Image 1 (cartoon, rainbow, N blue to C red):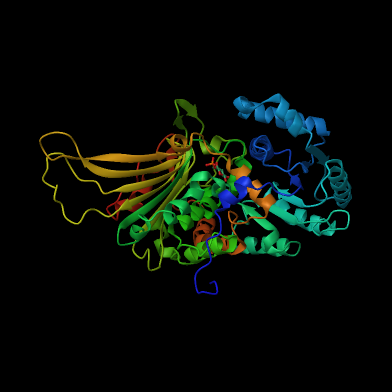
Image 2: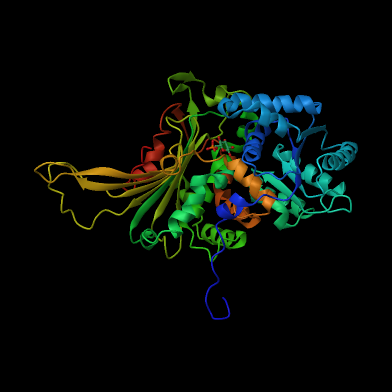
Length: 517
Ligand code: BG6
């Protein structure tokens, strides 16, 4: 509060703050740089920031991994990646200017000698590019290497500012943050032995998507929705992240993860937190994250005896997606032929608080489904009495508000309207807002926004340690039930379908249906 008892003016939206702000010089050290993430996501996103002139003059990437490339081969490998992925956005002159900022150092995390060599290379690159200090370490390695990697950074003295390399130190960690509560705690212990929590940026790329950031703006920047955003008006909420893709080349990772660890523990619970949390007192990182934590703590634990009713898992078999015949999960590379890993999960959650008591939240995610779509659908209660029940034109549908994250990127509100003609006939029609139509462009890749925020020191869009722990405690009972009995609650579905039929029962028992996106 200010002295006159009024609340201080709201902090500027992170979007506005960072859209204009150019971060201070920094060196981004990416561990696991020969992997897919660097080529497909990180470097294209950085190149996008470079083209939009959002990177500081003193900026460089130092890629580290075991593959022995010279700098030039690393640059060519990344250039080919961008050219293949976004041929329309590739322009050789900008690439050449950007590529000068890319360096490579072969190294093995387990070998202290190679860490010494890395420390020397960091200093050399910083000098070469006129970067006076500020280091961000990006852990894009398999989770089993997080522990040795963080320890080595600490042991090599790289986690603290030094006379020749002053400024901040930050570490960006890719999910999964552990594989259960115990391992997440263990990881936190290792990380916090080297970095303070405010130096740690756990990346959940869903939070960098424009439409996900718009959830808070939509809810709290408009007068008309918040008064009805509660159990008095909302019947239930469905959160869907459906993919047409299979596990691609990540069979070994996915076998260990499955849909719950890969998607629900992070992306879907984050979406749920944003759609259901109370308004934060400001848009500062801590205030927003405090509200998310409060919401996640209000989720009812799932009792063991109810798991079979509220949760269904699935795995894809062969089928057809987009007119192409595709293999079953068990036939994918690096997947066991008898695998019982889930590639689909549907789950009902309940929030035990004043706003949401009695409103079910249904979550589902899966690979190799009929259509790729990520959306949050809010279904309102039916109108109080059926004034139009006897009309010839069928049932009146209740209103649905759809926050579409992808592919349409927009918001759609379904309402009933009288269709033209002499009789009263109510038909569903849609109000539509799409980013493309309203702002004329598709939004920027999520990784660009998040990398920029990490450089600016804005952690609002990065899950905090407590959020991670709460998600694991919620999902722990499910995960241990399946570890004890791996085939439990697992049903097969053909690739290209809507998922296992059994998932319909979760809603069917309550007289509801999944939306067909
Ligand atoms: C990643 C998961 O976090 O998100 C992948 O590991 C998944 O399995 C991906 O395919 C989905 O992200 P997007 O942005 O394509 O919806």
